[in-house]
Structure formats: C-alpha cells, structure tokens
Image (cartoon, rainbow, N blue to C red; front, side, top):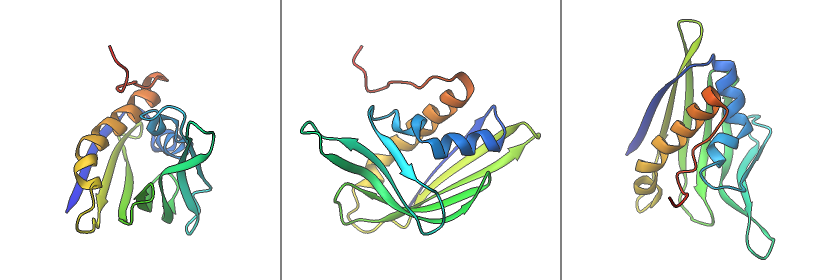
Amino acid sequence: MELQTVCYINAPPERVWRALCDGQPIAAAMPGLELRSTFEPGSAYAYVGRLPDGSEVSYVHGTVLASEPNRRMEMTYRTGDQPFESRVVYALEPVAKRYTKLTAVQDRFEPGDPNYELNLDGWPKLLSNLKSFIETGEVMNYHAQS
C-alpha cells in the first residue's frame, strides 16, 4: 500500500527544502509542535509537543534514511508509541527554474497500521499547509472551530 500526494509550489526547491526542514508549516496541523532533527542520514527526527502536565511527547518520529538537500529526503515514520513503522519520501523537482513539484510518498505500511487510513486525508492537508506557508507566509488552522 502506498499514499502519494503531489503539489506544485510557487517557489524554487531551495525554499521548499528550508520549509520542510523548518517544520513549522507541517507542525501547524498541531499547534505547539516543534520539529527536531539535523536531517543528516542516520539521525533521528521528531515532531515534539507537550502534554498538559508539561512533559514532552513525540507525536511523529523516526530516522532520516537519506538526505539530498533541495532534492530528496527519505525517513522512517512512526506515531507516538505505536509499533508500526512505514517510510516517507519527499522528492523535489524544479519546474521552469522557479517552481517546485513536491511529491510525498508514504509506503511500506505494516499490516494493521492505522496511519494508512489517517494519512489518506492528512497528506493533502499537510502539503496544502506547506504550500500556503511558502507562498503567503501563513498556515491554515484547519482544526479551528468556526
């Protein structure tokens, strides 16, 4: 099973890469999260937040498997303390020397992994937030109540 989401962003790959590594546009789906990583192959990464008691929790975490700045990043993907692990690959392709085609693929799902169903809707929202942030400087708070 595989999830694939593609979006086109009005920015060169270098800006898209910086936004991916900054983590703010993706973490905006869950306010208060912080992305921690050096993004070197073999290093850990985690979207870390705080529980009401002040303790830290890693909501999404894994290991960076490959990193080619401005082109490609591959990492393992786990949520919370779930035993399931999948893989996420970001591919950035320049378009007309000023835009970026960003493809996010999540694959290698283990049987019973609930993230497949959860991320069917999650990836389009996350990449839309990334695109909005890069192009406008703002993120969408799609969890807010109207």
